[in-house]
Length: 334
Figure 1: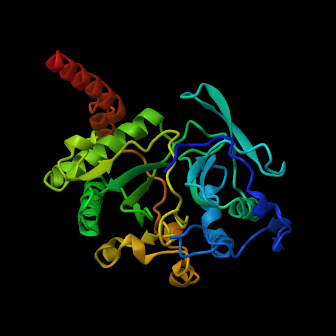
Figure 2: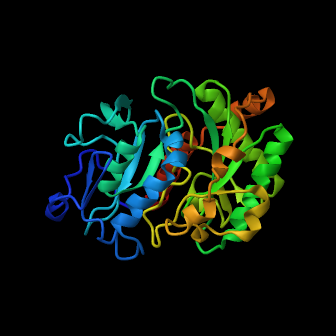
């Protein structure tokens, strides 16, 4: 996938023709065009799905700075963070300082149907909200464990790793909800009461480490890919201002799968490919399993926080280790 694009061009000439349809004051164009050669879905399928699932999806996006992945015709998917200048002025925004680029980014807030439809018409397929809400940047609402399988392994190893995290949660007296990522892995969300960013990040590191210790032959917290030795990666780095694909969001992948909530006792019976925009609504019926299965916010256990503060931050550790290995290679080469 291409890197983030802050100011993408407007849609191509074919997409600024007269509207095929209008909903909630939003002109919808070229609805019968395929999303991509392997999407097995049209733009109409995307719009119809997002419109129908909005009562479940919008609460996940509400007041959270939003990044989207768009897929314009003939182009590779790209991530859009900064709301483009041609966006209508009725879309709510929030300024966020981007430390990496040393500038302010104007993020959209997708708080209503009209905004969601506008993004759908822009061929925004994926919806990645932050773990903080606008105006509450000091409160991370969830701990996240992102389960990432190694290449060539089937989904059974992901399920096995998810069960390790579930056991670690039980041992810590915490509850969480699980969903497919819509790609190869799974996401486990643990809602938490207000705590500092550092404490939430520490607790997440400790939780992943405890799950790893339950079966170190299956799972690893090694951030450097070459150190994982074919094991499932328990990624505990989604914290602070990070984003995670929203429950019910489609993915810009072959078949247009959906990040879909699953029950802990159903993990052995599913794969991510089972859920896509053509069958998700039928599978959901009138239910909202993500909301129904999500525990109430929980206090972070003090021992989990303390343990996590003794674990090095993975990205920082990986950076230093990368520099050390580079020096070693240079010395050996010299």
